[in-house]
Length: 113
Image (cartoon, rainbow, N blue to C red; front, top):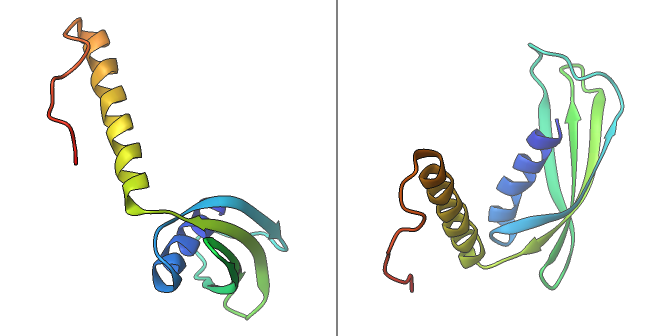
C-alpha cells in the first residue's frame, strides 16, 4: 500500500508543482485493505514552503469507510535529477553485465549536455 500511496502522490505533484522526490511518507492503516475490492484514493496538497510540498491522502472502501490515511513531504527537483539517476543506473547495469560476461568494464560514450 505504501507504493500505491507514493505513486498517487507522484501524480498529484505533476498537477501542483512538477517532479519531486519523497522526503517523508507516513501511513496509518485503519482497517485491513482487502484484495479484489475497489477503493477510492484521494490526495491533496496541504501546504507548500519553497520546494517542499506537504500532502495528505486517504483510501476509502466502497461503503465510504476510511481504511488508510497518509501524510507526506516531497521536495521539488529539476527533471535533470532523474536523468542523472538514470544515467548512473544504466552505467551500473553495463558494468555488472560486463563483469558477468567477462566483457569490457566501461563503454565509451559522448558526454551528455
